[in-house]
Length: 279
Image 1 (cartoon, one colour):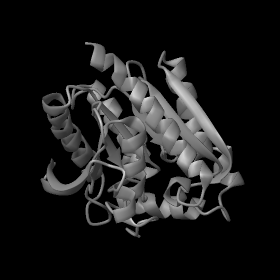
Image 2 (image 1 turned 60 degrees about the horizontal axis):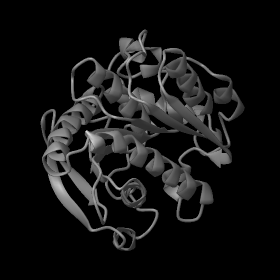
Image 3 (image 1 turned 90 degrees about the vertical axis):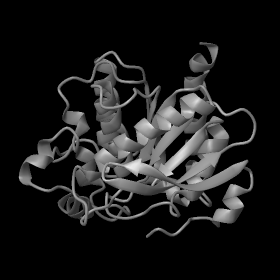
Image 4 (image 1 turned 30 degrees about the horizontal axis):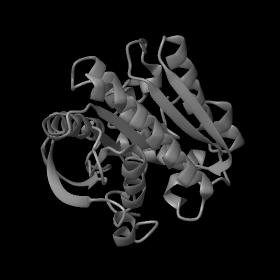
C-alpha cells in the first residue's frame, strides 16, 4: 500500500528539489525524503505518514508532502519510520523523536526557523505523541502540531466509532487489527505514547490544527482532543470536512477536500513560522 496517489515526478515539478536521504532513527538510519519549496524556506516540518502503523511510506505520501511544502513555504521531511508488526510499539515513536531531533538541527543551520510536526491518521497519533514528548524534554519543542484525522484515545469508545464503524472505508474492526499489530502488551493500550488523548496534562503544548472527516470513525477523537487542548489553555483550530471519509488526503488528486485541507494546513504552518523569522 505504498502506491502514490498521483505520479511522483509530476508532484515534484513545482518544488525546487526533492532529496532522497537517510536520517538517524532510534536503532539505525531510516530512508527519508526532503521536500524543498521554491523561494525562501521558512523552517521545516516533520511529516509522519498514516497507514495504521503497518503500511504506507515514502511513495504513498509523496504528493501530499509536495503540496504541503508548497503551501507552507517550509521544507518537509517525510520519514520511513519502522512499521509493525516487525517493529512494535514504541519503535515508531522512538524513530519519530530521533527524526525530529535531527531535523531541528538541520533547520536551525540552513533555514534559521523552527520545526513543526504533522501527520495523518496513525501519523497524526505520532505527531501528537512527539509534541507531548518534546514538551517533556525528549526533543526540541515544535512550533505547531498539524493533525489530520488522528487516532488518539486507545481503547476509549466514541459515538463516531459506532456510527461510522462499518461501510465508510475505515472500519472499527480494522482499527482494532491495526492496534493489535502495533502494541506489544496489554498495558500499551493505556500508555500515553499510544493514547496521547489520555495524557493527564495537556498544558504547555504547541498550537494545534486538527482536521477531521465527517464520515470517519475517528472523527470524535479529533474533536475531543481539540476540546481538551483548548480547555488546557492551548491554541487550537478545528475543522471537520462534511461528507469526507477517512484518509481523504490520499485521494487529493480527485477529491477537492483533500486539496483544501492541505492548503489549510500549509497556511497554518506558514503563519506558525513567522514569529520565528522576526526573532
